[in-house]
Length: 145
Image (cartoon, rainbow, N blue to C red):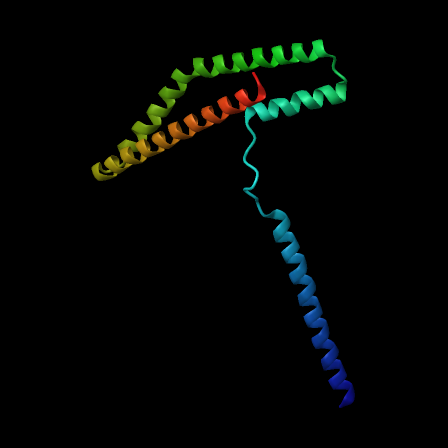
């Protein structure tokens, strides 16, 4: 009888101990993978500064080389911007075709709601774009450019 009581007690202790270990590991795993919104996303200027800084440190760039790198980055940015502008008409044609196909499958009340939905999304996108441009302008002013 004594042996079965001690076996039972030992089994209970092991079950509780293993539960504690599993709980601790689960908590640690959860806390490590939780996304934090404390740090706002980096702006393109932040990435650029980090890129140039790392290039300077790792490659020991001279002042003239840093200036040339900045010129290269400016020219590349302008080329990408130009490419995006040139492709906008083609992208608009694709987007308009998508909208037409979606409208064709919807009932008239759904079409009205879809149009409202699209306008709300467009207004939100424009507001976010204005906010982003304002942040970029403030960041540029802060960095002295």
